[in-house]
Length: 71
Image (tube, rainbow, N blue to C red; front, side, top):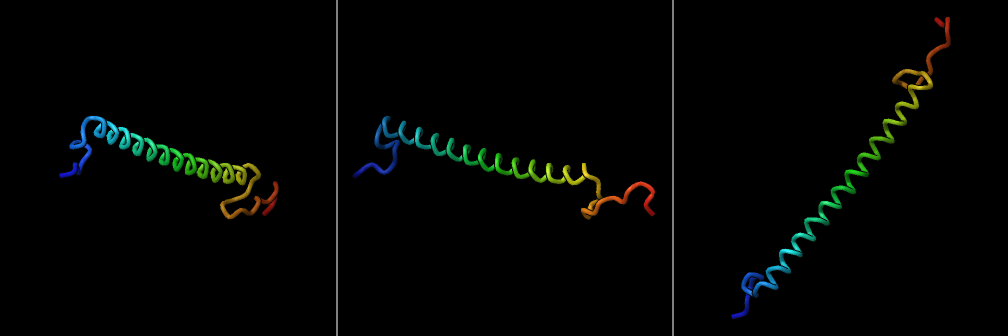
């Protein structure tokens, strides 16, 4: 009967399976890091835009504050 699992095929096949699993794990980790980088960049961009709006005055609606002495 033909072997059905890497362990039954011998040490080389078993090692190949372990290496393949390690590569899959590393690729998943890289994808996760890329996703986190995109998320972090998006958050930073949003915060910069928010802070830019506050530096020029204005309220949460985006309208500028009236000048000094305004009623």
